[in-house]
Length: 279
Ligand SMILES: NC(=O)c1ccc[n+]([C@@H]2O[C@H](COP(=O)([O-])OP(=O)(O)OC[C@H]3O[C@@H](n4cnc5c(N)ncnc54)[C@H](OP(=O)(O)O)[C@@H]3O)[C@@H](O)[C@H]2O)c1
Image (cartoon, rainbow, N blue to C red):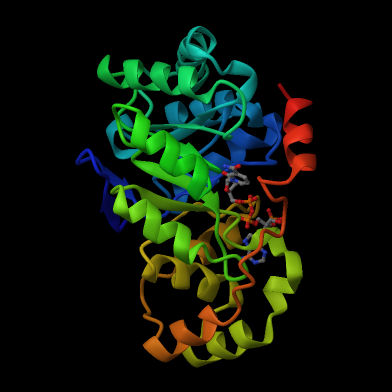
């Protein structure tokens, strides 16, 4: 698997498998399937309630722990220094491991500074190999990255052909932070899987729309973690390292950008209220 080097020197696979909206019961089977077809990075979160399924699948796979890159996220109900610190230990227990490769703050709400200090401390203790954030848009990102001792290694944000994060990626790069896409297919919104431009480009390379959408992100240096519960699709999604989109096709896909979220705007008052309900 192609890797990228994080700002602390850690090598991270550029592609992994995400388990959002995979039920705790199904998660172990899905992760076992993903590992069997070659994925070596798994993205989970405290809020997905399936860290234990991930841990079971990794343990039972027989694959050396050092070959697997585990990503998890601290949820806002565990923010503040003390609660975040305890929650990292709980994630380690559920994942059945003594270190997590990358731990992120899931959202930019509540006491994120206290929570980030807990990540920094766990990083120094060797419990986390890298730390970062998720859903931190340029304002929150610049603020945190400028004020904490350890600059986030990664910022995981909604990134797909319809919301490309071009300016946000440039700002992350100023800090040496790697952009990681969530929702690389926009969960199929805006008819992504039947988009005419992506379909036409796919025909040229004998690839599916899904493969074109992922390959485009890879060529931009974005880390990706597409989700599927179907092993055939997991296989299809990882089969994107044998073709290269031309500059012309990259530029054509750039025109699909709307510069807007297809989910929710983190700066909207209603979004903030929604998150306050999930503390
Ligand atoms: N940090 C955050 O706040 C945040 C938010 C959202 C997601 N994430 C992470 O990002 C990961 C990916 O995002 P996501 O799960 O929201 O959505 P996504 O990967 O954009 O889309 C998943 C959807 O696409 C379908 N699909 C997958 N491969 C396909 C293919 N080759 N052809 C047709 N359909 C296909 C899946 O269906 P089937 O499963 O039925 O195949 C599923 O409905 C998550 O699992 C999670 O790890 C993080």
